[in-house]
Length: 421
Image (cartoon, rainbow, N blue to C red; front, side):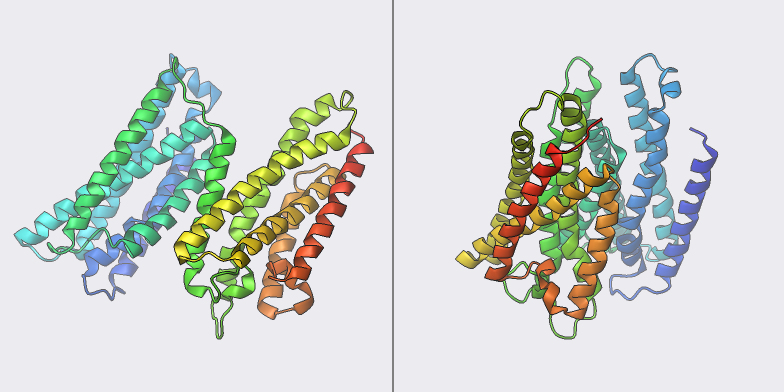
């Protein structure tokens, strides 16, 4: 692959990582030394996303029909795509390690050399495992953006769980903490073996594993909900509340960041529910519209499927919340029900907008409005609009129920009077 755009972007990425490494080297303040600080802040996180970004060009190249005709089979195309991803990750890692060693390796002892060897093996297996996870998700979903988003979420989870909570992984040039590296090496090897097995099965054309896309989306939604809970745990004022106001304490200086973390799981859940309706509408309703006698029955069927999806996500969030905070209360169950109703209300508005405009771009417009309004209401404490923040009150719940009943009948009415041709 010798695309001019790819070469230019790759050069920019390499130069940017070099500049950032130099800046980090001269601003470090950790006791472990400049090498450990450079590795943790420069090699493990953002550069790995850069690496996945470079792999987009490999994805586009090997999914080009004209390129695929050069190979004897699709199995050979997949194999070359897999090899190019591995080489890309190894090349990028070597570049990063060279910079880190030049900037931070100054102690020439047996201890430092042994620690450096263990760290290099750990990072090598980490990059290989990360690349294989990306390749596996790409093989399953056939969509680059699913793989990219999943890898980004995994990086966040790695930092929260592995580095912060479990304290695994030492990148200082000493023997201290290397036991955590040994554990990580074993874990990376297990991940690599599992991914290799799955990819091997996919590369064999006569054997295929079919994973329902809904299951993948369900796991993604639950995972994002859990990550959001982990980020917001230190901001919670009441363990039995899911309202945005619950995360606004006194003298908060990061309210915008908290608001975005609170909204991201909602936005993902709304997007998946919205796309489920749009996909069913395009592939089912439009084609069979003449044969569908009862539009109410069709609306009930698709909305039941979407409601079930949302309910599973909410129940998973409730279970994790109870286990995480070691608490179970009736009020928490009621709040979870209110959370379900809150998502249904927003999703119903999106569906009405889609039926009227017949354009999926309505999601982008309403999303922008939702983010701006919720952020403004949350920060400015506007009382009449507290229901947008999932306000924990009985009156708000009744309003949600009434609104859902009304908007459901509006959807049925619009479908009965909908001109599908």
